[in-house]
Amino acid sequence: TLDISTTAATDSSFLAPMAPSATGCLPGSCSCAGACRCGSHARAAERGRDEQPVVDAPPPTRRRVTGKRSCPLFDSPPKESLRTLVINLKRRQDRWRSVRARLGALEASGRLAVERLEAAEGSREGAVPDCDVLRHWTTDRNAKYDGREGYRPGVELRMTDGERGCAMSHVRAWREVLASGSSGAGGRPVLILEDDAVPVEGFAERLALALADAAAADADVLYLGYIQGAAWRRTVAPGLHEAEYLWTTVAYVLWPRGARRLLGALPVDCPVDNFMAWQSASRQLRALAVEPEMVDQEAEWDVGSDVPHSDDVVLEM
Image (cartoon, rainbow, N blue to C red; front, side):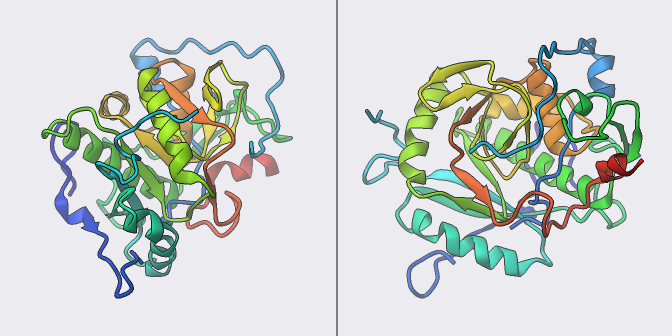
């Protein structure tokens, strides 16, 4: 059983460093990767954060939004590599091989230091403690942003095993980020990827600039791939915005401060991307996002995922 303390180091058995292939490239998806969708409400209400954000315009239809500064992570050659955790189910070695191939050049160049973080199997008894991830959620908060026809508030749902496993996998990643930040690594950020992540051309150069700007803005999290649920709150720098509500967790950079805030809001009480989005919407988490996106998914969020979405039934009611 995973230690549920928010300050304890993550069980090292979940982590496996990427080894180089015979060619020198590092051979590479998280069955929790396909875009689960979540937000936080019960726990937040308990803590007095139940004010609803004001949304002046009708909720948008869900869609994809499609001078360098010095950054030590991406100097040429880089002085240090960006630690990268790739969430991947043990039974999905096919997806691990694929993502290793996609990240191989970035690893070989010293840009990324890639590790495999074993995803939680939500169907396995005891794999997802209720104190970390709840079993039920309501559509109340997500409905403020989900513009799909028929989606509405007031529907209570049971999270699927895949959604709970996905959420637990990200909780493990947050704990690892916090542990690394408290063990001598200071406030260094960590890149968290699901195993269907596909970096776009120019990824390294754009990330260098985005990291520098995000750090200067005291970001807790920097989204590299997402589905936008609300208008940007403000523009922080060219190509970098403060976000209100974003879906999917395919790729984001998390600082230890952000990990502490997410862990302090446990338990996850809905699909994990909605949970993170609500922390941002309620101003408990400072979330920034790059535009255009720097990481895509192999397929759309609702295609070929190992994570069935519990709120799909709302559209059929």
